[in-house]
Amino acid sequence: METRSITTEIPLRPRLAQDPVQLVPELAEVSAALFKAAGNGAVPRATISLVQLRAGQIAGSTYLTVLHTGFLRKAGESEERITSVATWQDSPYFTGPERAALALVEATLQPTTRGERVSDELYAQVAEHYDEKALTTLTIAIGQVNFFTAIALIAKPVPGRSFTDPWV
Image 1 (cartoon, rainbow, N blue to C red):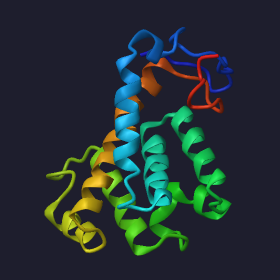
Image 2 (tube, helix red, strand yellow):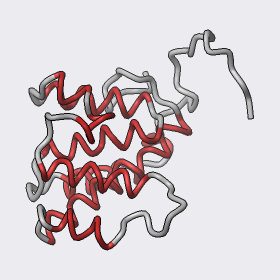
Image 3 (cartoon, rainbow, N blue to C red):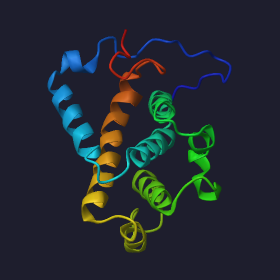
């Protein structure tokens, strides 16, 4: 594995020279379908964005972290809520349903040495806050961001640019 000095500056250019949608146009259809499914209204958009921000943080993707932080700011979320997503467990800024959703994304995306990632107990706790459609929507939202995590980590789009134009 390549080691880099902590003081080395990271260049502001994508690793993959061309937009993946230009290379594989079907990706646009997949993206639109996932966005539509995750935004079906069964779960508040703010909750979806909080979950997706946490997923970007867990994956270590600056692009996704900046992207979802921007979405939350544009939606009018407070800086306290946005900045405390990384430490949501001891933050007073989240509701019970939001905490359940954040616990679910963490369990899904973080490896564990103890049994299942999503235990029956966690599933039951989340199901106390979400009906079956909403729980399925949360699952799709986690899958959506996880799908794009691979693109973000491998292709390395430029953080801070529009999600429709990170390759310019």
